[in-house]
Image (cartoon, rainbow, N blue to C red; front, side, top):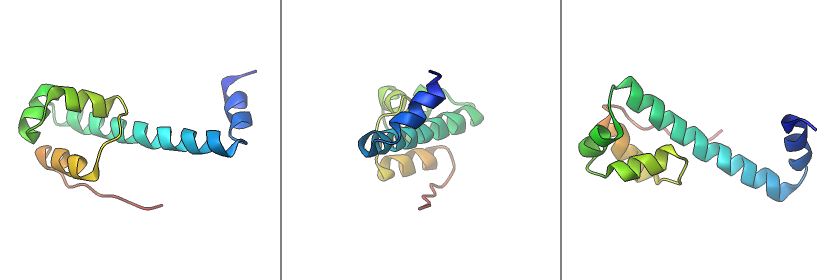
Length: 88
């Protein structure tokens, strides 16, 4: 069975579907921060210094750890950006 077929089959289970969606959201946040940091030409340590946090915090967020809206707003400001949250 191919991975897409397996995922589609598992998505029929509401508990799996919820966990799958939540993980996707965490990874989307991680990727968004990573791309913004890279576009700014900053290392994790440089961003951490600007945002008054630690490099380890940046690494955890970029690996998909849950992060608060306040922390993301702080990071956005350190990147010279504004945080926008959408409900879709």
